[in-house]
Amino acid sequence: MKSLSSKEIQKFEGICEKILKNKDVRYICLLNKMGKLVVEKKQKKVNFLIPDKKARDLYIKLKLESSLIKDFDDELGKLEFVVTYRKKMQMMSIPIYGYLVMVSAKKSANSHLIANSILNLFEKNIMIQ
Picture (tube, one colour):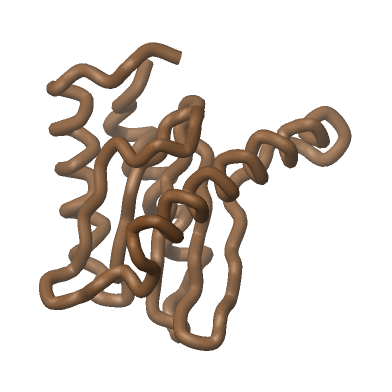
């Protein structure tokens, strides 16, 4: 997987802005194959609930989990997204083109609608070749 060009990063940031129009989405980021944060966007006046050090650990864990789940693609089909429901919020992990999109949303959000809209936006905008 190659590094993202500045043009590709700008395209992802534009997609994030579209996704953030859904006020149920609190935070969205793109992680590379090592779980390193590439781009992040959030709603105004919203803080990601996890401190930076723990957030880095979370990103690595999510990327690792996504990679391990791929081992079952032949039997179960390609992973579309994973949703984790928490007491305060829900999180979605969406593998796209070797990267991982991580979304934090309100607990009451429609995760399937959000994840599918993200997949559709990427499909239409084919950000990463």
